[in-house]
Amino acid sequence: MHATPSKSVPRSVSTRKWLAARLLCAAISLPSAGAAAEQLVIDYVVSNTPQRTAWIRIIDRFSAANPDIQVTHKGYPQEQYKRDFTARLHSGDADVAFWYAGERLRDAAENKLLAPLDAATVALLKKLKFHAPTIEGTRIDGEVYGFPLYYYVWGFIYRKSQFQRLDLKPPATWSEFLHTCARLQAAGVTPLAVGARSGWPAAAWFDYLDLRINGIEFHRRLLRGDAHFTDARVRQVFDVWGDLLRKGYFLQATMDQEMDRVLPYLYRNRVGMVLAGSFIAARFPDALAADIGFFAFPAYSPSMPSYEEAPLDVLVLPAGGKNPAARKRFLAFLAESGSVRQIAEADQTMPAQPSPAAPTIQLGEATRAILAGAAGLTYFFDRDAKAELVAPAYEAMRQFLAAPHDTERAVQYIENARSRGRTGDITP
Image (cartoon, rainbow, N blue to C red; front, side, top):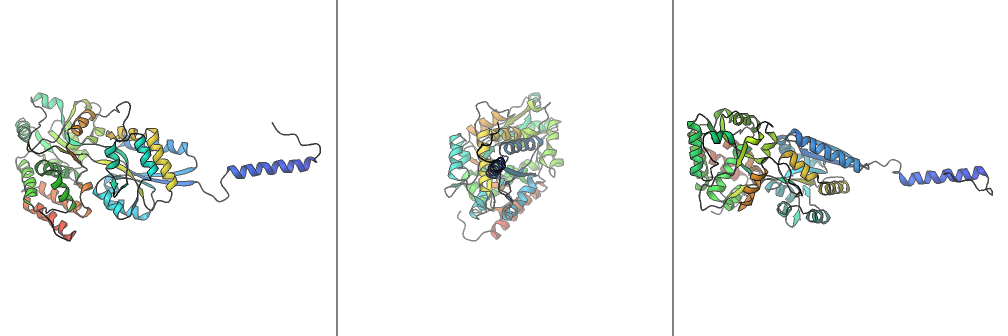
C-alpha cells in the first residue's frame, strides 16, 4: 500500500522525498557501484562419471544457497592433476583443491603452500562427528591441513563364481595364496594382473609386500628416504614379488595397461585376482557387481601384524587462495549438508562423516572388516614417499615387471634417486 502525501506539504516535494527514500533503500540492499560478487575457485579430481556428477550437483546446490558467491570449478584427470598440483598451488588460482593425506601433504604444508583449517572449521568437523582419524590424519605441527572427504582400503578383487567353481576360498596366509595361484593356473586362468602404465597399481604390490614382510616402521622410514633401498629387507620384497612373476602368475598382456583396462580380464574369467583399492567398485558393471568379492592382502608371516593401505582423500586450502571467507562457507556447507557422504557413495568409498543409514558401498562390508583388523594404516606409496622417490620408483617397478625381473637393478635404480635427493647419514 502506497503512503498518501501529507496535505501540508506540496505533492511535488513529497514525491521527491519518497523517491529519495526508495533509492536509499536500494543503495543499502545492493552492492555498491563497481563491487563484484565474491569469487570461489574449486579444483577437484574426476575418476568416474558418478563422481563428476556428484561434485557438480553439490556445487550447484551451494551456488543456489549462496547467490552472492560466484563459483568456478573444474574436474581434472587424476594423473594430470597429481603432476601439476604444486604448480597450481604456486599460481594461487584455486581457493579449494582436492589432495591426498600423507607425506606429499606435509611437504606442501611445510613449504607454506597451504593454509590450515581454522579452529572453527575443525570444531565443526568434530561436532558433526567426522571420524577422528580422518581429522588427525592431516595434523601437521599442531594444525589440521585437510578437510576429510573419504577413505578406502586395498585388497584383492575376484569373481565369487569362479572361486566357487574351482572350490577356492579367499586366502588368508601366503601359503594359501600360493596354493590359490597354482590352482587357478592349473585351471587355465592366469592368477593375477597388474596394469602398471601409470605406476601406482604396481606400487601397491611393493607397499603390501614390504608391510607384510618388514612391518610399518621400516616401511615409513624407507619411503621417507631414511633407509636404503639396497637394504637386504627391500631385496627380499622384490625377490618374493619376482618369484610370482617368474612362475607366470601375472598376465603379461596387462603389464603396460591402465587399471581400467585390466578389469575386463577379470570379468571374463581370464584372470583370477587383481590387487586394487575398494574404490574400484565404482567401475563394476551392474550385471557383475554382486559376483565381485574382496579380501585382504594375505599375511606373509604369522608374527607380523596386519598393516593396511588406507588412502585418505581431502580438500586443502591453497595459501594463495584469494577468497578465504567464501571457501570457509563452502567447507561448512559440505560438512552440514551431507555432501561428503554423497561424494563417497558416488566414488564407492567410505565417508569421513558417518551416516545414520549406511551408504550403498558395494565392497563396504569387506572394507570395514579389513580396517577393523588393521594394526596400523599407511596412505600409499606416492602419498607417503618423498616426492623425488616416486617417479624413479615407479619406473624401476615397471622395469622389474619385465623379465628377467632383476632385483638388483630395481633397488639400485631407486637408491640412486634416494641418494641424489638426500644429504646426511642413514641409520640401519
